[in-house]
Image (spheres, rainbow, N blue to C red):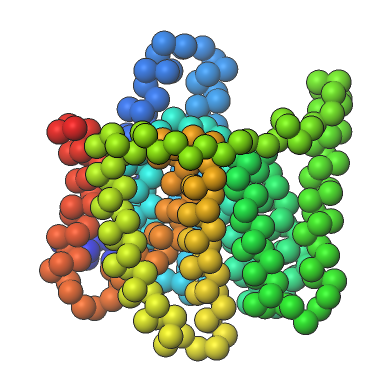
Length: 308
């Protein structure tokens, strides 16, 4: 039973998930690597692959450390399945690197509930979001999550609200200095900004439309379940659950404003959704249905390219 296997968090679960992700990443980038076979290309792809894989332990750490899920492997399995379902994600180096930076930011902002090193965490979170935006501009919207974290956990201390602008200025200074030293030019807003596109024609492709429809159905189903958990959560845990939902909503905004609608923009959506879906799979109800659902999700990225 797959639900029994992934119902516990063990090294074998992590290895299985990483191998699953590695196979799809290699298949998605095989043609590019072979056609442009060179050390710089291989090194770049290897670096991006490491960023992609590192997203798994960071996601697992965030969920476990902040008691967002039980100690199961469902969250990393769901994230892996959804991310490999769109080959455009695996081929978009900027999105994969940016997503890791966003995860590192979420790790800091969600941990604000401990009330330890608050100002450092706010600075670090803002710093990582700014770095993420250098790779994928619209990830800058996750600054909303940072200010929401301040509002929910530390709004009483006015100086905390001023830390994000300081972090933004720090990143701006570093990027500008780097460009002047290595490129002899300033880093301008036009270089940073990516114009939005609202052309959804690619969504008509069955290889994009079918997995997206399935994932949205899972999202709706599990979010309703998550609201039940939110209502039952104690007063200390509730802000953290709210931040996960808010991250999901901001990720939708990032996808809507993205410069290209080819499926790669959905990666940010899968991080909070993996946490939300994990809570559903960890529940003790509907075990047979959850087993069928998990098998179907695992088969989805394998069968859809074959038949469509």
